[in-house]
Image 1 (cartoon, rainbow, N blue to C red):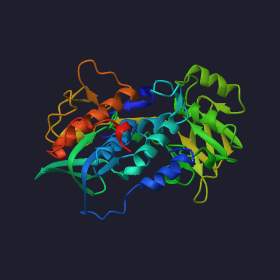
Image 2: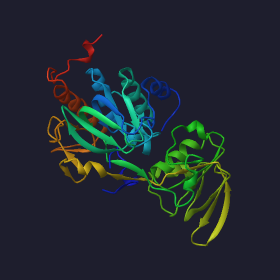
Image 3: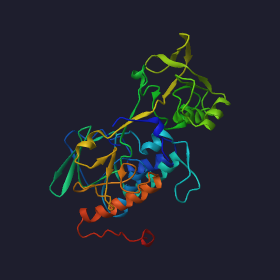
Length: 363
């Protein structure tokens, strides 16, 4: 499942319901780790760059292989594109699930890896790579150093950067958000959603039963969202304003109101709201990875059948990879993640075998 129509290809690396994930994250220590002092090093067997489905499954598999693992992602929460773009949508092509909601899949993957206690470095973009004795040293955008015996890049389409709302950026985290990590946080609120794509209409459809009011503002008459979802939203209590944009955001430290400009007429109206969801899409950028010596073709990393990249101790898996016959599916990424971990194992520990044995044989 993809959401390319809402992701701008800029040319870097690569939130949710309460309950299951909260417990799993508490066990796994899922935090946006900004506390590690600049210059301090974290030593692990394998660093996974990208916390989407492939990266989370790689974390489980590395733990299964007895490897100490860290996961680094530029986004503030695990789940990658699934969390950012379609957490409420059903996915139908995951083995063993007739259908599974995006956020539930991410919850399950976090819970699956949790017993092995991977160290999460969320809100960190992997920026620099250097080879040291028997290891690779990765530096993050926050100055954290990770010394790993192998690196597995599972960055999807690259680093996701939300397209900003043209005004009101000072309210980010104070009523303005680019993600809806927990629907319950919007219960009883007056919510404004800005955008006309799948994310905007998915959020509108999901929040309509919970919020006091939901308004969608889009700068055009046409929408990029799936026609069926648009029809459902238009038939609901959600108010949809077209040919309009947010001209001003106001409030005393917290979003309290917006002024909406109707572009064709110049008319303005004030809406009293407490939450804004700017669902304007994202840019995806390979950024620093382009300087790591990787063989990159059409924004993908060329890999061998072992998922090796050709750069010593660096492997890749998931949507970011390219090889003959490549199919970009979450299901494919799971297999590639297992292949990458199992082929990295003897690099990390020369006495290890590629084949891990069967998990059903483990008590």
